[in-house]
Length: 612
Image (cartoon, rainbow, N blue to C red; front, side, top):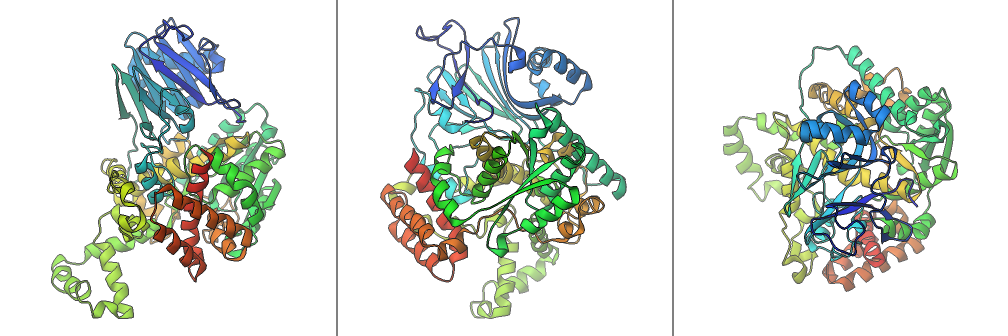
């Protein structure tokens, strides 16, 4: 059972006699997770405090999440009258420009009776998820994909393109989904359904200002103040502050959020950490350093191969789309542990890497871009003919590295980021069955990345990569993981580092100090020097991954689970048997760690399909 009901409903332009209040054009309903049945819209006219507002019969509004107004006057009205009432009134005055002043984590469904338009809105960073499908004479929408296809008017047919995209991204990229005819909103978008047509609009995108006259000290002070306000909002919005805790991995972001939470709660914060018995993956000691530094009440759990065997099928069944990020398992156990300790709200540190340039690929791309500074005549007449097109020289160890560098440097962004993607290194015919690939667009995934990369105006390559990751890495991947695992355990989750005020602040930090001389998150680390312990600031980045490749090479039960899943996957006529067999063979050899990720991705696809 989830902590909050999902926002879920339908709109029908053609009334049916069997429906409750069939004469109404707008029909909103709630989906019951316990019995998985569609309910009537009898609860449409509940109070504004419950998230629904009806303003003089002109506008219906339903809200999921915690929106707040950046305008103090509107926020004061919202506190007095309910946010839904203020949204309805502001919409009638300003149309869709009501979103200009709305911040926070939210999904909004709005029906305009006069225009006969259904409008679906998602927050700027896409902290929530909203799926939708067009039906005969109407539309269905929900916070989960399986809720949409649970409606009798929507097909449950699995889309081959969705499976291809899943293998490409290891998660399901928006705006598509795993189901044919079901789409999802992207971050910063709203969708209008009117006269039988649907169209999505980008109402917000960042404006990067790549110069600043402020000092590092003043910007550092401003950043920490914003994070504190964001954390305080999360605590204030909770029924009981003692039921608020934080994920603590021991990295920069979770340590910052945990430290600020401890400050807001006057030293009474509770933090939750996951460990592994594989040293290269275990960060528990850094989590303990942060906990001691901020005097949090620390809880820890060590995930084992037995945990994977006992829980992964239930996790795959709960997920509404296939999901191949192996850190879903530690996220699940962290949320489970928190719930068992009485936590209702968890604060997560997701977002810091993507708004302050903390991923290795950002620095790596800067190295490739230096090649473009070499005079074009020298590149075209000497370097490339000698090193790219000479089959003898490029096989020499040192020159082969230069050959690889030049080959990658010549690729444009964002294509270069996916150069090592399995689906770029191998022909689709080697991986998929002929019938499967006959109706897919193999260029669609890279085109999604290109469209996202090119969306911001007047942005340099670093800022374009950041924006692209707000969709690809956060909205489509990491936030799916944390949202779903918290939902599964009945815990609400907030992302203080994705607060609109902090994101807006990050766009004013020059890229030259976000990433300075190849040093990731240079500004962020300078800003928290007096706040976080030096051991955490200096530590190498680990992430929250699972040592699945190591475990499956040593643990017989886990190996049997993964290999039997891949064997079952053969029967679905998606992949060539030879591809599955080669994956297992490579995993059993010296490439266990590398191919362990591919085994996990394929295993999760099979477990998800088997649960449908």
